[in-house]
Amino acid sequence: MKITSSTKNLKKALSLVEKIVSKSTSLPILNNILIKTENGRLKLSSTNLEIGINYLIGAKIEETGEIAVPARIVSDFINNIREEKVSLSTKNNILNIDSDHCKTSILGFDPKDFPIIPKIKKESFASINTKVLKSSLMAILDSIALSEARPELAGVFVSFSSDKLTFAATDSFRLTERINDFNCKDQKSIILPRSTVIELIRVSSDTEGDLDVKIGDNQIVFSNNDLEVISRIVEGSYPDYKKVIPEKFVSRVIVNKDDFEKNTRLAGLFSSNISDIKIKCLEKKLVIVSKNSEKGEINTSMECVLKNEPFDIAVNYNYILDGLKILPTEKVILEFTGHGSPLVLRPDGNEKKLTYLIMPLRS
Image (cartoon, rainbow, N blue to C red; front, side, top):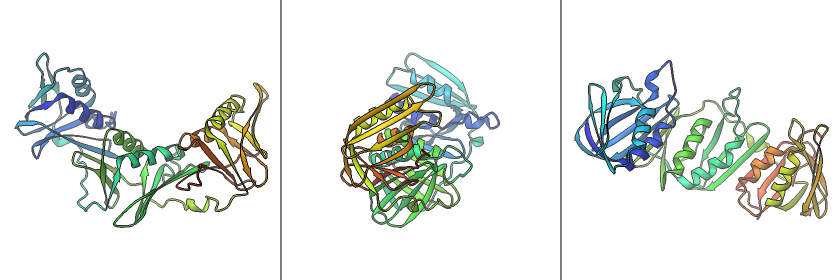
């Protein structure tokens, strides 16, 4: 292989593919990035056997070829080059990198040992805007279960239909559902692993436009002309979370989000080891109370607008803060759905495309 590339483009490609490189001791080849020429462009690939990423950049290709090289070394080296262009060449599994003021030789590996990243030959059935994808995944990220005891809960439920795209996640203590207006050829639903969600958020931050979606037997691909993200799909069925979302409320209150967040943080300073606070909603005032035998106690209040009867509920204050950060409006709606039932948070404006609910704690 012998090519010349823009240093800027090469840096971007490396930043996109290197993050999922595995630090494997049993399979050292997973610590590498595969660099190869393909259809007149330079392709960089990485995989941890759960996710694979391919990224293509333009380059002047004099000789075709490929090599697997240690991700950390090649990335650190390229990121410290200031010249606009850099030349890459290979011989006997050694990658030579030349710039105007620097030359290096990096010991690589036989590219034949690099794992094959699967291809899905089916046609794409949908396209997702990267901004929509990122904002949706950011909204549900905190509700994904961290434990793998129930693999389906350690992922995100994604449902494609003719008119909407739905993302949902729950760890049994709280639940988030985000619904987007959408146009899709077919109706499909899958479960994305948490690690893939994190990777798609990162990739979407550096990518503009739309990503085409293809689904195979146990894999999904998000791609455009330059990028491919290939992930396994979690096996099994996602719980029918819709049954948990209350259809009616007993009482509803509207409160300023910033004031509610500030007072929740203050109350959290005096919570116990289960992070509990009590929210008391009166006719024109919302009060947050917290008490700890070792720290003291606090009572904070703010104005609110209440519909129906006053109520009180004990919740984990961290879950409240996680919910508030995904609500985009200046005021937020809290729906009390009965003792022992979830507290529902929504953006102001009766908007039901974003729903966040928290299971109460015992008072």
